[in-house]
Amino acid sequence: MAGDALLTVRNLHTHFHVGDTVARAVSGVSFEVRKNEVLGIVGESGSGKSVTALSLIRLIPDPPGRIAQGEVLFGGRDILKLSYEEVGKIRGRDIAMIFQEPMTSLNPVFKIGKQLTEPLLFHYDITRAEARERAAAALDLVGIPDPRRRLDEYPHQFSGGMRQRVMIAMAMICDPAILIADEPTTALDVTIQAQILELMLKVQEKREDASVILITHDLAVIAETCDRAIVRYGGKIQEAAPVAELCETPLHPYTKGLLASIPHAQEKGHRLNAIAGNVPSIFDLPLGCKFSTRCKDVLDRCHTEEPELREVTPGHWVRCFLMEDLV
Image (tube, rainbow, N blue to C red; front, side, top):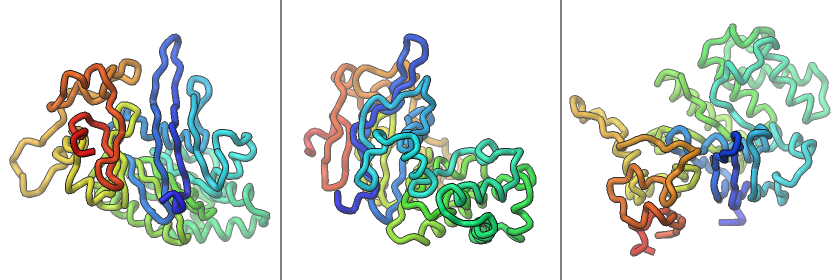
């Protein structure tokens, strides 16, 4: 499938230096984003999902963060080796991102219209009037009524769901090849969540071969919207597979725990399942398997050895000693 890859990530390491301590937020991550697919990245808070996304477009604050090694290949070039100016030409136009919290992502002192037209004026040789028309069309596309009037309003004049729609419009206004959506439905109620996810995928379909990286902690959202999924824990990929296969035949104990924790309507009155223990501190990860401190199927070697990510069936990868007999 290499020929279908829009973006290829190889052996990515992103570290944060705090005093004499190093937090390895992303540790040897490799994956690809294929044309016209929705790739889900799922895991609990602290698994390195957002740091991975920020690393792809070089938005890691340095210091304290640093992309220690790896490759991010897009359009035949390694983004990690480009100059700041060259990366700036890719951000927004070719690879765009919807951030977690729209109220902090939108600048409160600038009107929505200014923030929407800024990427258009930066990436294209058009007039301000043309940029404003495209901005109004973008707001209309994401379902904001009376878009021309609302261009002259400030972020605080929009509801949470409407601000998220503005963020989607801003991310998609240059028709990027890859849209990174970092928990785009956080803090929204269930009804609005469904609308935002449907809207995001609908807007993405405007451009042929465009793809989405959807980052979330909710496997139910992954199952509903994605083609393939990557399960993250402790800065590493623990399992990766087509979504249908991942949900029907999960192999890693962590993936099984995540799926078991999804509430079901028919289980009313039953106690919700939960994965025992807590996510370890990024400053003090286990020596061996990163999930060893919470795994109910843990082996002695799991505490001292790090299992490799292996392909057990075509397209289905897992990092677990229990799966060695299947390889």
